[in-house]
Amino acid sequence: HLYGLREALDMITDEGVESVWARHATLARAIWAAADAWGEGGPLRLNIANPAYRSHAVTTLEGGGEHGTGLRRWVEQNAGLTLGIGLGMGADRGGESDGHFRIGHMGHVNVQMVMGALGTIEAGLKAIGVPHGPGGVSAAADVIAAA
Figure 1: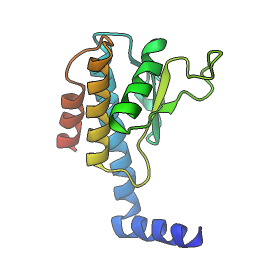
Figure 2: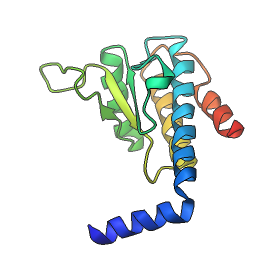
Figure 3: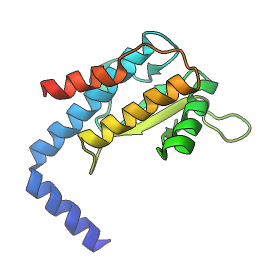
């Protein structure tokens, strides 16, 4: 653990703590933009409506009941992407999330990882037929390009 902590601190020092914070903020805004675009045509919505109260570490989306659980299963089985369950959001009798899912975007996470995850999520939305607005990945790319 001490070696891992030392490496993490070295990585933060190399990047600069302000740069780390800025990267986390940019990645968070990119995910929020994708979620907002997807939500325009279907049941997906951000759990926290006001951006001022959102975390730069993790984003929770409401997937509209079975859509969130189905999406989590599809992205894991077809692309190896694990989306977090909605902690404290309730669960059905089988222990599954009630449709909420989480996307983590803090720590050793970069643009390529986030864009890959968003592309996978968008593919999953299409594959399982979740109604959603177009352009989630494009909206995220716009945020990243402007940073």
